[in-house]
Length: 134
Image 1 (cartoon, rainbow, N blue to C red):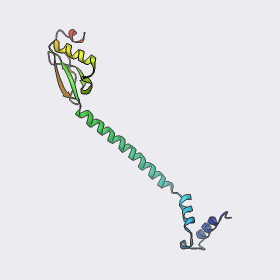
Image 2: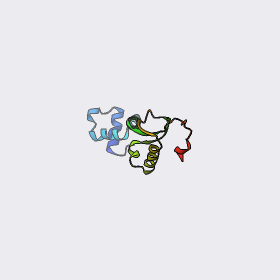
Image 3: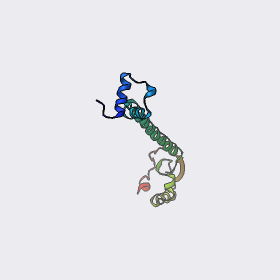
Image 4: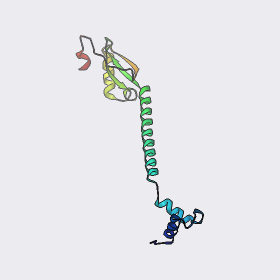
């Protein structure tokens, strides 16, 4: 048995006693509210997940682009070995790095700027290797 007028109209429509034109909009809204398709909900959820993944992927690409344009200040030994490095903004402010930089230059080393992608450490072949790290 039906409980309300909406239920009565709903059952009359399902049996075929009345057509869709005779069904009031309040009953149609009731149908839309009660019969929400689960597939639509899952599709919306999947779309939101893809948007989140795309946003994270774009953030990673931006970070990679920033890293590829970053420069590294490299300390080179007399023999040309790269034994220390500091990322560009930090190399001007870090006091420990500046002390090591002065020490390297006093001992005959050199300083160069390289891109962060291309930089690789190399082993020192000098005989007085201990003076660099003490």
